[in-house]
Length: 213
Image (cartoon, rainbow, N blue to C red; front, side, top):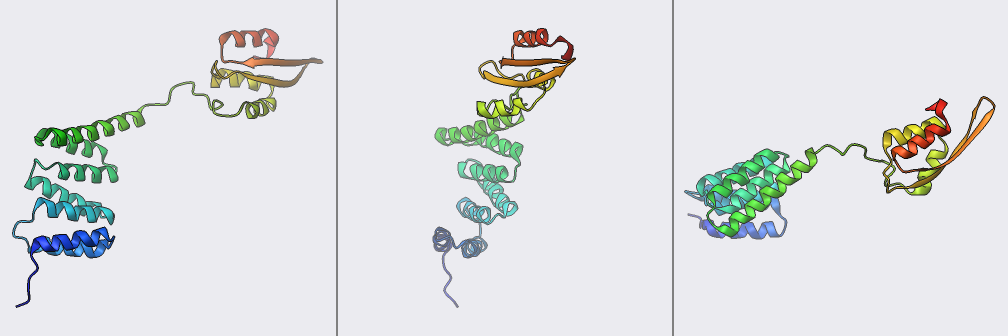
């Protein structure tokens, strides 16, 4: 009869294989240890979940993490593992549920705080990503002044005024722009002005060219 390696020893061998980044072999050894166990431990299931996760086999990783939670609802590692896997597959609401469930089950304060931080960080991230962009965001804001001047210099008077109206260039971004001469009824209109996004500026532009606004 061949010598049977104890489950605990198989687990240590698999961990060493994982540390060497020999993930496929580690997976086989962890599976062997689990199959040799009458009742697989939370530690074994979590270890194999890590390998599945590393190999991108998220469904199998999640199954092991959930089984680990069923075995011991107070083990914080299982909740963290399951939550992280769910985040990796973009099931963020499910991840929040897992963290929340763990917060209700894990008695250790330090471990519970860990889950709470993960939950709150994810919730805040989802809240920020769902928030609409503020109205009046100015695409010129991050451009160098010289580049903005070049862009505006190629626009007609009417187009420049449209830029002021629609883009609402912020008051703190003061740009000196020169508009090409605008021919109208034999008269040349040359305008140098500061774009500062204020109603006063628009009123001044209307006074200078009331027929073209």
